[in-house]
Length: 117
Image (spheres, one colour):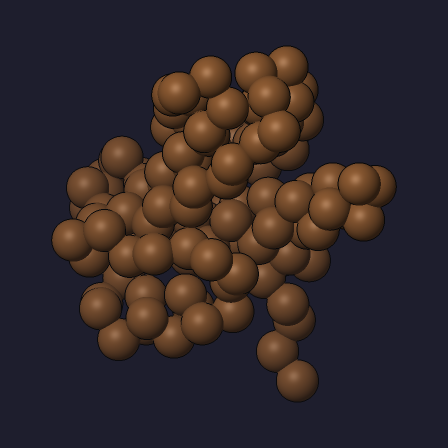
């Protein structure tokens, strides 16, 4: 049985590596909750928080996970409580397995957050 994405570790990815083919990206997307594929080059999830402070707190909880994986999402806070999380591997101009690993770890954080409410 394949190890779940959330239990894997991001690997260094450098230019010259090919982005994931659409079929592989679609298959990995199926292991995530509520993420969408954006033009085959990124994945995105939108989280509606109860208020501004919860949204900022969520960003602060995502940050150490991203730092530990050395893979950093684009985080956009709009409308005071809407957090958009986007992942792509900038070094290769598309998606890598790292994007899906970090997304799965963020999903775990969001599940924990839901359980606490």
